[in-house]
Length: 635
Ligand code: ADP
Ligand code: MG
Image (cartoon, rainbow, N blue to C red; front, side, top):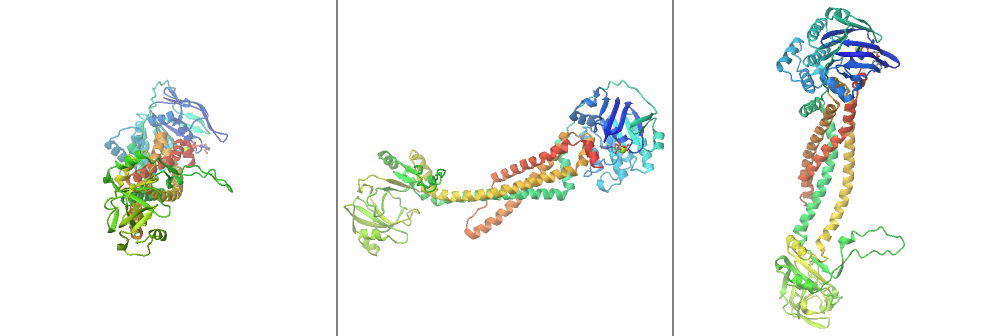
C-alpha cells in the first residue's frame, strides 16, 4: 500500500536517509530498529509527509506524495495517518478525554462513549482521563496519545518510541495492543529495544546511518488503493470551544490582553460620548432657549456662519487682502416678500420687526403685530395709529445718552414719559407706551418702536421671532427662497466649532491609544504563536489543516475583542455615571457623557474588526508553520 522508492534526506551535508526503498503491507506490524541518530524519526516524518525527502518517491495507493501540494498533504494526514510522537503528544490545555474528542472531530470520526471507555480502561488511564495534563506522568501522557490514535480508524499508525517513557509492564501492554490493531491497519513502531521487537514483530527493519541493513519480511506490492484526499473541516463550535479552553487555561494573559485593548476602546468611547453629549446639550439649548432668536432677512448683512468658512489660502503678508463677498448675505426685499411674511401663520410668530434706517443716531425698531408675550407693557398703552410710538427700555431700565438727548429727557419716572412728543425725521410722534422686551435677543436693547406705515422709506431688514423651535423650522421652510440668517445657529456654530476642535484633539489621542493597544494585541498574539508552536505541531500531526489552525487563532482574537468591548461598555457606563454626576454638580449640565446605543454598536464593531485584523498576521504565521520546523524547534 505504501511504497518508498530511493528516498534520501540530507541535513547539513549529511545523508540522514540514504536511498531507502521500502514496501509496506496494508495490514502489518513493522518494527524499525536502530541506534539513536540513525534516521528512524526522520523516516516516520517522511511517511507522514510532515517532512519532504530531497529525492525519491513516496507512493501511497494511486498517489505520489512528492507530487501533491501542502494543502493536500494536510488532507492526507487527516484522512490516513495517526502519529504518536516520541515526546510531545497532547495539547496541554485539554485533558486526555478532550484531546481524544478533538482528534476525532478533526478527523470527522464519530466515536462512541463506550469505545472511549474501553480504550481508556485497556490503557489504564481511565482514572486520569479528566485530569489536568500537566499533572500526569510521562507514561500516562504517552498512553493518552496512544488512546487517541487507537480510536481513530486511519489506515496508518506511526509510533515513535511509544514505550520510551513507559515502565516495562505497561510497555508489554502497549505492544500487545499495537499488535492487536495491526490486524486491521499498517502499524509502524520505532524502538531501540531489540528484545521487545523480536517478541512482537514478524517484520523487523534495521537501519543504520540512514540505510536499511536488514528486513526480516520484505514485500513487493501492486496496491491500487483508491486514495481520497478530502477536506475534513473542524467545525466552528469545536474551534470556539477550543479557544475558550485555551483562554481559560491562560487566564492572566487573556485578561491582560483584554485590558490593553480595552484602554484604547475606553478612550475612544469617552471621546465619542463626550462630543455626542456636548452636541445634544447644544441642540437642547437651541430647542429650549435659543429658538426665539430672530430669523433675519436683510438687504445686505454679514453671516457669522460664512465668516467661519472664509478661506485664508490667499493671505499675503504686508498686502491689503481682498476677500470675495462670500460672507455677505443679500436679499431682494420687495412686495412679494412682505406679502409672504404677511401670509405666515401668526400662531407661529412671537413678533416681526421691520427695520427702515430712518435716523442713524438712534436705535429704532418697528414691531408689527407683536405677540402677547413679546413685550412687557410697563406704562401706558400700545400705539394704535401711525403717529403713535412706544419707548423700549433695557431689562435694567436703561437707555443711552444719545437716545436721552434725542428724547430731550433726563432721568425721569415711568409715568412722565407717557404722552411726551418726539420728532423723528421731521415727523412728530406721541409716546403712548413704555415697554421692556421679554425676548432674549432684545433683552438688553432700548429704542423707539413705531408703526410700519409711519415712514415710506424702504425696509432694509426683517426680523422674524418664532415662538417655538418647531415654528422656526416651519417659517424657514416657507421662506426658503430667501437667504435667511438664523441668529441662534450663528451662536451655536461658535460653540460647535469649539467643541469640534476639542474633540478632534481628543480623537487624535484616543486613536493613538487604540493603535498602541492594537500593536499590543498583535504582539501578544504573536507571542502566543511562538508559545503555541508545540500545539500547532500536534494539531497538524493529527490532521488539522492550515485553515483550521488559522480559524482557531482568529476565533480566539475575536472572543478577546468581544470581551474587551463588553469590559469597555461596563467601564464606560460606570464612568458615565460618575462624570455626569460630577459635571452636573459643578456646572449643572446634565448628560455631558452620552454613551448611546450607536456609539456602543460602533465600539463593538471596531473592537471585533480590529481584534480580527490583529489576529490575522499571527494566525497566518501559525497556519503556515511546517510541522517539521515546529517539532525541531521544540526539541
Ligand atoms: P533517530 O530518530 O533515529 O534517533 P533522527 O531521525 O531523529 O534519528 O535523526 C537522524 C539525524 O538527523 C540526527 O543526526 C539528527 O541530528 C539529524 N536531524 C534530524 N532532523 C534534523 C533537522 N531538522 N535538521 C538537522 N539535522 C537533523
Ligand atoms: Mg527519534
